[in-house]
Image 1 (cartoon, rainbow, N blue to C red):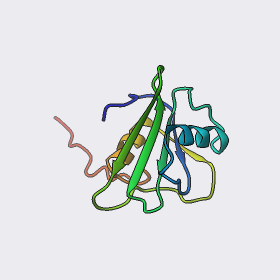
Image 2: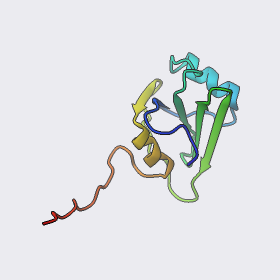
Image 3: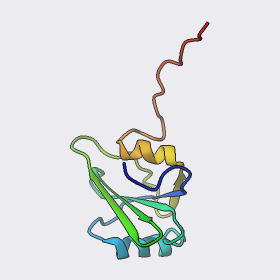
Length: 115
């Protein structure tokens, strides 16, 4: 994914968002409901009602970038607890974008010892 890179702050908006909103509407949600300044360089993640659509909003220094993904199968894992935000790491954001459950990743078998 072309995006903000590692080490960026990520805020996931809990609950459901009306994804008909564009950049201005999502930036207003980030400021009013998540209590974050949308131009501080953080990534804001929003999920639609059906759970198969995801929008990411990021300030790139010169303007906003809006990323949009629709899953063909499955749903994005999401906390549904009312309002507010959950803070993610950039690694968890990468898992979310790929449709992997970032809350319980399956790391598989640990690597064998060399030796």
